[in-house]
Amino acid sequence: MKNIVLTPAQKALEVNLNPAIYGTFAEIGAGQEVVRHFFRAGGASGTIAKAMSAYDKDFSDAIYGREVNGRYVCESRTKKMIEHEYGLITERLDRKKHPIKRFFSFANNVETINFSKTNDGHGWMGIRFQLGPDSEPNDVVLHYLLNEREAKQQQETAGILGVNLLYGCMFLSHDPKAIIKQLFDNISKGHLEIDMIQMNGPDFDYVDNRLLSLYLVREKMTDAVIFSPDGINLQPSDVLYKKNILAIRGSFRPVTKVNIDMIKNGYNKFVLENRVSKEKLQVLFEITLSNLSSDGEIDEQDFLDRADILCSLGQTVLISNYQQYYKLLDYFGKFTKKRMGIILGVPNLKQIFEEKYYRDLSGGILAAFGRMFNRDLKVYLYPYQKQKDGEISNSKNLQIHPRFRSLYEYLVYNNRIVDIDYDPKVLHIFSPVVLRMIKSGKSGWESMVPAYVDNIIKEKRLFGYKKKPKKVEETPES
Image 1 (cartoon, rainbow, N blue to C red):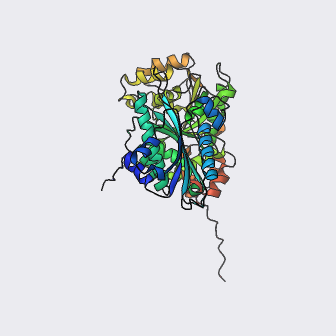
Image 2: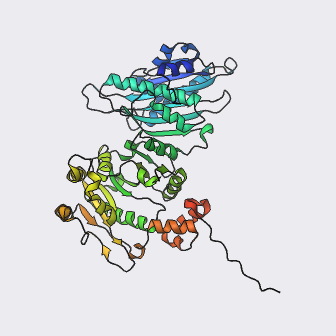
Image 3: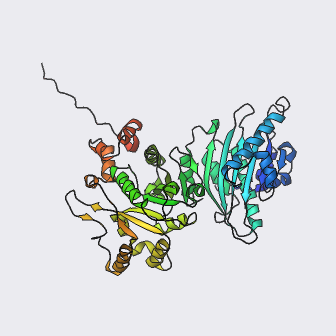
């Protein structure tokens, strides 16, 4: 039986008719697009303690404080809004008069498209809420992109999203993924994108927010998400805006000494380039959704195993739905025009020159290369050695299909594809081999992964680690 999707009016009415739900709405930027649904649904007096819109920046600063970076539509402003308003409702309302109330404060901080259509609509939403009158509150904060090209349409979409968020937190808090899934109720995914969500609080202690990031990409609510070494979901523009970006793609199952050698030597080469600033450089370890899939399914524990290792190494992780590199670079191009670098192994570079990956693209492989190299991009090539004593493949002897040989030579000649240094002692290491050794309990893999990574894998039993059984000494029969 197909699940029935409630309309915004039905969801708002269900909230209004619940005598325990009571709180405030604060909205900045597009008018009071969320709270109007609750006013129109009826019974709002039992739900809404206050609704406000500090539209003027001076008023907003007077209430919530100034933003150091001068930006108003940002995460820190939204968090200040929910903290300030929640503090007021708990301070001003006597618990003796409201013994059953579950308090909440809702904030919507949005920038819709301007009259000249020179900006992109986006916003932050947050809610602090209780699940019981005596319980500590939880926080849910998300960032969203509005893809419609009219301000009125964006306002309506933001209003529906806010209703869905409040409804989900009040009635579906036992299932974080259910909260996220219904955020798109009555909204086309083409009109809205959610690229960051974070759930914290006593009732979400068991939630790994990295899995929520993965869920956003898997459900096609966005094409890419980023989380920090400490597992915090990040809003991509906060990480990438006007930055030099250096990215390495891999399965990292597990991360090996080869991966570390690639990023170290690629980084050392990249920072010597003109127009690259160490202070404005963001390194990303990227895992594609297809790299996480096994038989069409994503193993969440396997994903967390990889994430745990990368985070323990202090890396920022990007999960994307971009199998083709030109799409990844289009994504980076939304945030920066500064020089970018991609670190590739020889097998990955050879794949880029295969026509089959561009059959659905108008213009084919030439269009893809145009989109990749029409920006300030360097490809850093790490060599490949099939056998321990075999020939080492690099940019000088790489075999490319004759049809595209001239294109390849042009890119090498113009230093758009360059070789990087390498440690010959690690070229024989391949992740699939290491993974099989870990799973089978075979010794020797420990020397193939970075320092301390073997200890983490053993202690947490990552990647199906099996402890090698001790040999039992046979005793002579008496």
